Image (cartoon, rainbow, N blue to C red; front, side, top):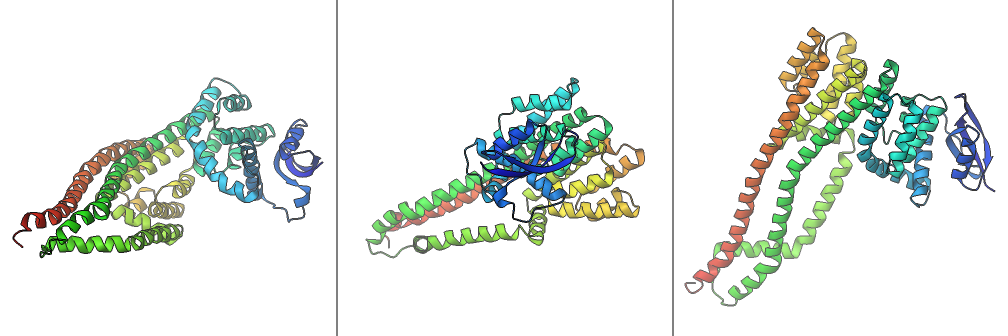
Length: 434
């Protein structure tokens, strides 16, 4: 029977190590659970010769791998280290869709007076996503072993980001965990709603462009050659528009693969570049300067900043810690860089509003309202007003973007199709004159 080496917490919350024999890793974990030992890492003895990881980061990664192993086993997937790392982000992405309702349910149970472990047990019974259910079971076991709820969440960074963990930590310290969980659920739902609005505003024009491009390709590749073949048989001189269309059509038919390959290479190059710090900074700076949609991206980022900042402050997180978290969770690297600089200025003794005004990235009204909030001691309320204002602005701007882009695309496609029709019909009408 295989033998496994494990790291775990005993019933007193102390870290312990040992070995256990079992047929599978799951059977080994279940056997240890029966002894009130809660596993954080488990390795087959045949792999024990490798240098073990030590430290908090290693334990966090090990705990996440154990949780993922359960999910992989339950879904009948091959369990290997490389595959687990690739699947972890995919499982977490699917689980985040259910995380909002799970967080809200947990808040309701805690508010009803049910202890945390009992609330987690009830939540596990309601969860539909297998990966999320596995993670919640690992969190429950960690909490039963004496680990704080925030630290147990931090063991699964693929699912719970720094904002989530720090808000829970502040809620535990203040004894208001149910309120913080409810605030988190409201925050995540609002962020998802805003993201969907922006996506909807940009999706419709993109669909129209793709369909228009498909129509043009169909005309150039199938319709135009048949009609032009009839015209050229007459042997008469062709009008200039027809000559231009024939040149475009010949280039399209002969070199379409070059264009497709170039587009694929350009996309791959873009994907590689934006993964670098400088590339991501250039992309996000360029996004804010785009005509029409740049204003939409800016307002979305400001609304997310204000909502997140207010939520963190309401949960009892210190302002400097809030800015540190915000710099990592905002969806724009340029804003993140500004927030890092703002935090450094605050540590040096200045206020929040002054460096925000000097950044010229945030609209001036944001700095002015933050200054008023600091002076009056109502920063959270002013940030919430900023969030509400820019949330409405995002909604209005997204409608304007759609209203502006749609006619532009229609006019552009009409001009292209009109030119093709003109180039085809003109020699038919004037054929006898040439």
